[in-house]
Image (tube, rainbow, N blue to C red; front, side, top):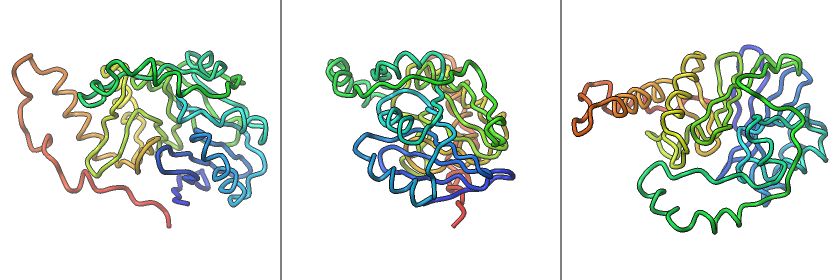
Length: 262
């Protein structure tokens, strides 16, 4: 399992990867899981948790209620006694097991969703799960023994959240996607303006590593670069491209992935 560390957190472990990432946070006796992966990965998730010595979870934080992040929520609540935490605007979707799919944010995904969205929506329903705690703008996790907080970071969907550890590492769900060495912008997002504002907010935490729900770790330099490019694109007058500067061009240093603990 890939692992990272912060000042007070013993370990951030990626317990599942592939199409959807799942992370385990450990600090002292505290055990917190972030997201759940797909239902077909349930046996793998159980094996990975057993391998990490986890018999009980203090909390399950869902970055949002889409199927690929929440399908195993009820199983984790029942099997591990996890307190399920989700944004207040997502709790109804989670309980019904039916969260609206987000809009395409780039041309290929917009074309893909055209005429297919309602049909796909019926295929991604899952066993609903009640929320034990909901988040508005921010929730401190200190009561669970972790120097961390949950932060509302909408854009991908209205109730998207991130988990920030020691202001060093942020687990950001689908606020970012890293499917390649220069990739940050997610292919699906309901509100790009909100998404960029969430990027700004995450940068303001001072975090140096951002762990997305899909793909590999994103370094701070790359996010800063992509944020500035997107911000200029949004603010540029229509018909006039943003001014080309060195900061807007690819930088090998910016795109170099952050290093995990072996």
